[in-house]
Amino acid sequence: MEVYVSYERALEIVTSQQFLLPAERVSLFEAYGRVLREDIRADRDDPPVPVSAMDGYGVKSSDVESVPTKLRVKGVIPAGSEEIIEIERGEAVKLFTGSVVPESVETIVPVEWTEERNGYVEIKRSFPEGANVRLPGENYRKGQVLVKEGTVLGAPEVGIAASVGKPYLKVSVKPKIGIVVTGSELLEPWESVESPVQIRNANGYTLYSLVKEAGGEPVYFGIVRDNKEKTLKVLSEALETCDVLLTSGGVSMGDYDFVKDVVKELGVEVLFYKVQVKPGKPVLFGKKGNRFFFGLPGFPVSVFTSFNLFVYPLLMKIQGAAEIFRPRVKGILVEDFKRRKADRTEFVRCSFSYSSEEGKFLVSPLRRQGSGVLSALVERRALMVVPKGVKSLNRGDSVDLILVKGL
Image (cartoon, rainbow, N blue to C red; front, top):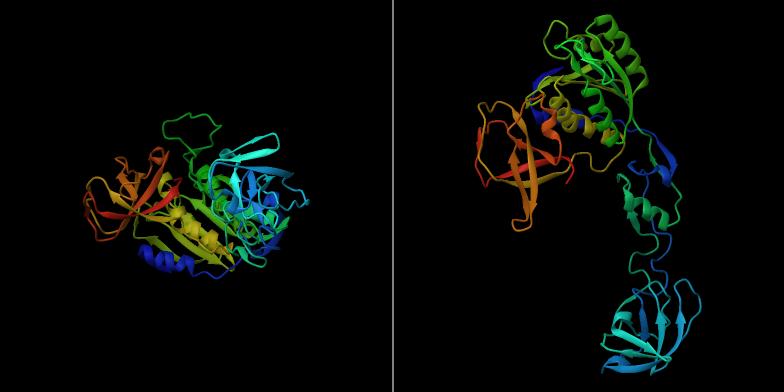
């Protein structure tokens, strides 16, 4: 077991774990948010034949070199029709977006530059040869990889799968993630507060939501009071039935912090305990076979931050995701930042906005940085990385941002 490791070392240990969940086939209705375990390839050229890019008239390009001009409308080809109407000079054919373009058509004049009357169309603007014609394979070619294995499937990727005739996709099985919240002072949201020392349980529901966001299947085991026997019983059940077990609280140095001792009794190999980060120093990470355990701190912001820094990459990796980290971008600090100590890597909660003038994100650290101030993470928030050893940053400095919550 390594103790009080650097942020970089902790991340190295977490991401070096070699385990990949099995795959399953799911319908497109179930595919959103899953990690793809096969390449999605085009089953044919797209478009398969020349088609019109917009509503308009197919003409010979030489007929529209000088405008305005009138051409005889020979016919109409609706989108989806297999009828082909070839044209000669002085003629036009009416087309719609997606209509097949006859070989004799050299360019398409958009409808807004035309006026049709009595079987003739007046062309009011010239267009070069090939204008508004989508050629075969312009979008993609048969056999081309359109979505790579390891992609987290979003709406465009699911749509692409449908467009190439794949009603089912091979994806990773959702990891089953156990959630246990410890602390005798905690209450569930539906319970009445009867003492000023009682606290409602936010961590369980924060973690539940974060797990779903990371593609996992959360299993909530509830609150465990500060009792070693009860802690042992619940953690034993959770560890046997889940791929990853998350606890909040119980990993510090207090007399009632039983989690770190209980997991050892359960046969978990502790790989590191405590990380040189702020917030979230008392993080414990271990494994038992192909099951993993994270003992997270008790403060809500520490839980949120620790999950995004360490748990999220592991969950994405065991699902086979090509990109396992939260997005990182460069930002510009809009005000000075100072801290009293520089002995840890700090992840400063901040607000951000994109400046088109600067071409970067503008970053403003939040005033409230306490580990219990979960409300400071509402709205558009990110984590500004302040490396160990850096005590102050100046306005205008470039900083790294971890985007943990919405653009």
